[in-house]
Amino acid sequence: MCEWYRRNYACGHHFTGASEWCDRYSQTKKRCKVVVTQVDYDSSVCKSCEEKEQRTEVPWEHMIDRTKRNTNREEQASM
Image (tube, rainbow, N blue to C red; front, side):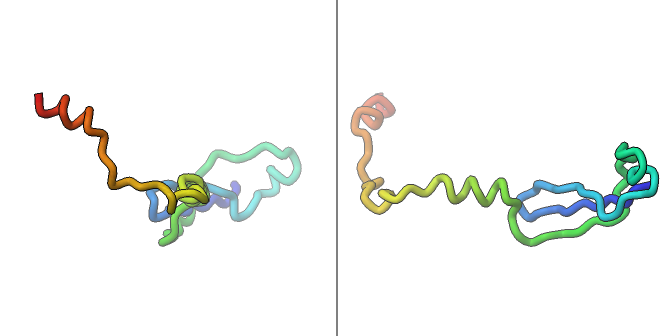
């Protein structure tokens, strides 16, 4: 049976991978049932969440004035 591991990330996501393939897989290339034998904890976020954080930043972010408010929304909310 193949040896599987699971890595839990700080963001809540996880990754499951094979740490060692068994002889059956080596011969047939058919995977065994996933039975996790080792669990690792990683204090960092996964690559997917890391990329999302980087994507939200734009080069012109410093030029956007986010202190302005939409006065129409404020007027409608007070009615």
